[in-house]
Length: 184
Image (tube, one colour):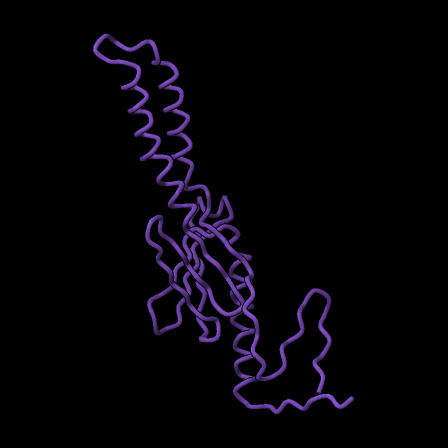
C-alpha cells in the first residue's frame, strides 16, 4: 500500500502506526506592546540625566543622578524586557508549550490529540494591533491561556488545524489498519 501523494507544500501523512516526528510549527512571544511604557521610561531617564548632569544643586553630585537613573532603568526597563524575552509559546505538531521565567523555568503544555476548544478574546487595543488572548480548554485540566498573542487569528487557525490533524491520525491509528509492504 502506498501513501497518496501530497499537494504542493504539504507533507504526506505518515503510514498507519508509524511514529511521526514532532515538528515545530511556530514559536511566539507575547505582543511587544507591553514594552511601550518601558521605552518611554528609558527615553525620559536618558533625557533627565542628560539635562541635569552638571546642573545639580549643591548637596547632590552627578554620580548620585547617574546611580538613580541606572536603578530606574534596571527596575522599569531591563526587568520587564527580560520577563518578556523569556516568555514563549511554542506550537508543534503534537502539543502547545508555554515557557516562562527569568531565573527559574515554568513549563506547561497541552497535547493536540486530547482535543480542546479554542476561545478568542480581543480588547479594543488588542484589535488595533492584531493581538488577542486564546484560551484552550480540554474540559479536564485548568484552561490553558495564551495571553496577548500577536497574529491571533492566524494562530487560532493553526491550532484548530493541528487539533484536527492529530485527532484524524489518532483515530486512524486506533483502528489498527494493517500496513502491507510494497512488493518490488
